[in-house]
View 1 (cartoon, rainbow, N blue to C red):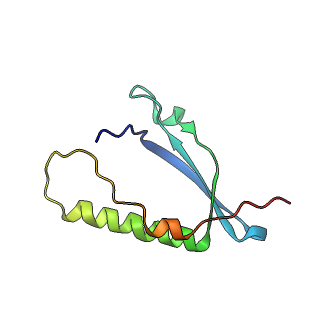
View 2 (cartoon, one colour):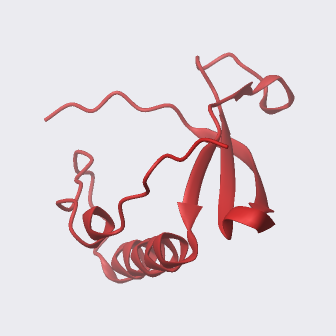
Length: 94
């Protein structure tokens, strides 16, 4: 399976105190010649504290897998979306 990827070049993270939520905005590279300082800012995403902790755990597990995997050239692989699905955020308007 070929997966189109956009490398992450940075991010912004903050909180929305009255909503008790974490806000996340990735910055990514659109093309191979793009400089990091010219990274494209993405959309703003909001997560509950529970979602944020789940993401931390899954990212940590993915890094652990990388560190313990043999060095071979393989296609990108993605684990199925699992724990993240149980943390849906409901959009609210003020």
